[in-house]
Amino acid sequence: MSEPAIEVEHLHKRYGDVVAVDDVSLRVEPGEVLGVLGANGAGKTTTVELIAGLRKPDRGRVRVLGLDPRRDRAAVRQVLGVQLQQAYLHHALTVAELVDLFASFYPDPRPAAELLDLVELGRQTRTRFEKLSGGQQQRLSIALALVGRPRVVILDELTTGLDPHARRRVWQGIEALRDETVVLVSHAMDEVERLCDRVVLIDAGRVVALGSPADLVRQAGTDGLEEAFVALTGRELAMEEDA
Image (cartoon, rainbow, N blue to C red):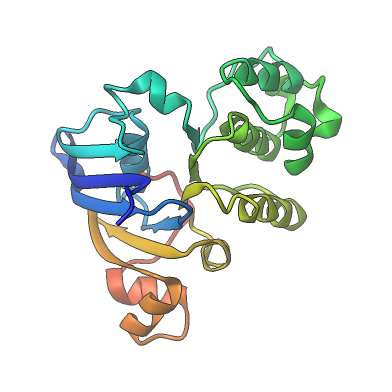
């Protein structure tokens, strides 16, 4: 068996009295697209931030391509791209300046024109980040996550706030990343069903179910993935900030 792209073993994270991640174990294979689904506060975002090394786990083990994302931080930056729900970027820099800045961190970055075409920001190169709409900021964050040609990509709420045309363009860009491993946190069932090879359902910080979208539907005995999610977790999905 080949080395996994991502390996998570018995991961725990607590904030005061709240257990956000409770004994999560996952294995993501090279080239796989894994969807992460959960209701508000289920622990999805905390889980992917722990994988990315943005938070320190209380217990458990994380490896990205065999690297510890906190101990081997510099090496992980070269192979991992991350797009989070909210972008924290320098508001005074333009789109072009931000792409050039991020490209400077990598030995063989993707061409800026290619990235900006993917996210349809080619006409906003001189626009400062603070002047972009929320959807445009989201699209720029996707471009910045991909600029270093990462082997592993974490995308948290990939197309939130995007219009249907922009969503389809971004989906096509993700589908073109078939050599990369992608972890996709999403509330959009059509997005998950189209893009993901497997889906993990997380509830109250724990893994409830894991399998292909079709496997989860069969396991739940329902007609679709959204109904399967409700049947397996007992919760409804909602578009609010996660924990």
